[in-house]
Length: 606
Image 1 (cartoon, rainbow, N blue to C red):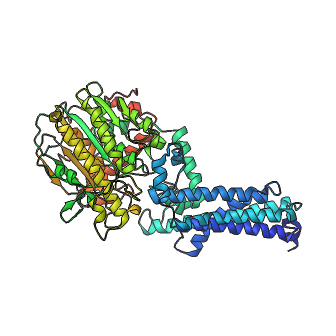
Image 2: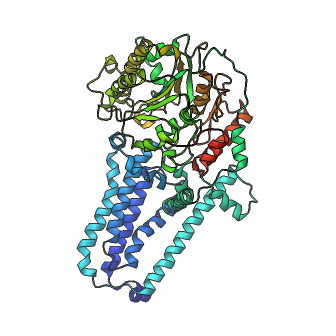
Image 3: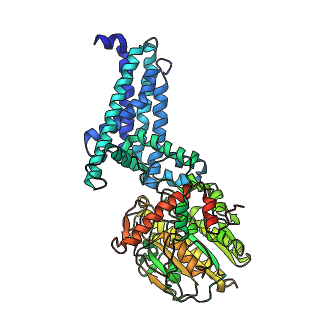
């Protein structure tokens, strides 16, 4: 007690102030962890998450006292804001913000803000109570403690105690991880300490899982190192890995007749948040999406109704990556954050000498770094901001009308990729465009609004296709309609939520069929290459399967789990797991041009 009085504290009021700071920090961190669902299986686990963060938030005030009198209120305020934004990100993307995704903050626009703000809960604002308490307490108490000094011995003692607590907490995380991993058979019981540590430090699928491994501060420290390593010291893909890519595909046997398909035009419509359930939904024999259903049921259409979503944190951007390049998205960071400049393989790039190419988007090109990714994919032209200021539900009608005007004047052969907007969440209101769907009883409002948005897109799609049929270009044009990803589960009821996406090819010249076996988004690119009759003409077919040659029956989800029949093709599953590794190495590689050159693809960017 004498040591405490002589070296650590001379006034009880200062001790009380620091106690308030520390308890407020504990409350702030606890609130954040509880909201994102990381309370830990046991009380001691939860405490091991809380103590280090509370120490980091309050330690600066102690070390820099009294000059740092405003540090804790300021630090807690910034932490509360960051936690608040992180919670909204978590509800939308099922992961937490990383340093890579922070690089996308300048691309945020009204579309993203609408989606994020719609997910706010009243209890989120509890986060701002601890900073308010520290501010009020600090300002009212400072006159009483302004002259109080903390000795050097006291500060050293606090640092030693903090280091012990931090070490014990990290050991607790390591021990829990080791016990769990051994129980799951990830490594043997007799693994060495270095092997266990190495396994723990391996890159995980989700940043959220890093929080459970290392705590908040530890996870961000490792993430910062990871991002620095990518930016400052990107590894080149090895010659051996490049050779694997060059020889990835066999010719295979085509299950459909060929027909005369060379020099076909391609129109690809990437549809925002289209669930197969929405396409199938009906009431009193009335479909919410009658136009799309007619197109799918046409005897000349080729359709897949159980496409597994494989997008990552970039969602729309990662879907576009797979469809344009045939690469898997990064397992942890959106490609548009870590390497949007490319260059990447694509049909516009491989066919640059003979095809015109254009990307048509409704929004500002800053969103998801689209201005960079479009060039990375080799598009010669991008038309953007075509429906950015329109009410969201009307956006696709405006977009597809302008797209028709653009495409109808294009020189053949051409590739046109259109991304839609009307079905972007949140599904709050659909005014002024309401249809009979809103009168159907016993459907939750969010589902009605989502179906209204689907109906609005469907009507615009029907008009677009009907107008294209009247042009001379139609006879020589393939139209692909594919979902970019599933609608967020948090935005819809369980009955409307779906892990199945739509992929349909119109006017291919091949015998039509509909298939409901599990396939992946990664299979879309090679199937388009095949449907256009370009299989033997281009050097890159993507990492997936041409669904005209083989139906995989499985797909790797973004978290590494398997959708469909996990035992259907163990060799095929292993090959796709290898493809995810190669895709990531390709995305972060600093020798992307060498990879394209080895494939005989023009690597220049206009």
